[in-house]
Image 1 (tube, rainbow, N blue to C red):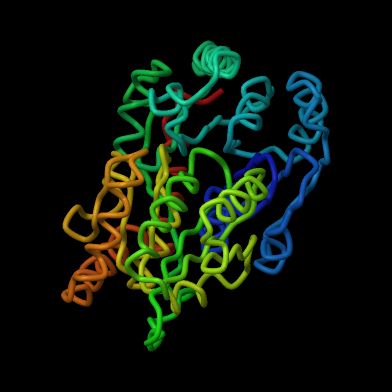
Image 2 (cartoon, rainbow, N blue to C red):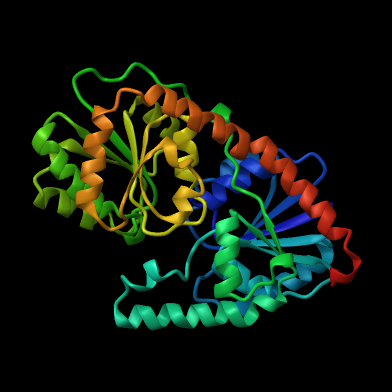
Length: 371
């Protein structure tokens, strides 16, 4: 079976890393990846080294989805995929305008239309998102099936996009446990908090910096490691300077040493405002790191509630209290072992890859849904 994946770029985002981890383990499916837009495709080498066929189209992000779809149609006719599976908004919009004899699958990977996102937007951005929401809603009927990262996202999108439940298959993201290093002996002279994610407003880094500033008042040798790149880097560095904590904060950028950094840290903090299924939390569980996270349904559906500390989203003072509490807890080994077992059972990449293959085969056998 041929499955053609459409994706915006191959940057080091959660969706991209998860698809790489899944596709490289396929036994029956032959994956083809078409990368639609120009960009910094940091994961391209890893895809190619895994033996995955990748074509980069290098369209400008200003190109219309109709124009791109027309150019893709000719190559699709030659490839003759059984299934086209698009991920992320722009590629999904393009996929809904494609023509051919294939099943069309889109992905539910983010809680994009939740009030937590709308509430923080200025009025112009509010209406821009509303227009995007309407485009998504009005074209969603063109999709044959949806792969959802979690039952929670499935329920949300049944409401926000009007997707019938029978069209949704719930399969989580996968991560390879072999990539993550068992915890090393920690630094005795300091406590290291780490967070991993793109430097964008919804990831909550500004609240984390404020919470960490409070931690330094009581624990002046503590350090905060911020791993990831994004448009907020300059703003966050300026905030760290303003809070007079910059000497204790390290911005690692888009590091390829995330497993090593996780193994050296003491606590993982995840202050995101909204998510899909957070791959960073899965990585923290595989690294046996104590987790301190925002109490949003997306995070709570990923990590067992008794396997972490939870703070009110947007509330940096509550985050600081939970970070202080984390330092005092002595039973973290048992807690992180339980979280690791959960991650092994639910998120192991080989198991998830098998679920993908089984789902493709089952969906393709439903004759009345074929195009």
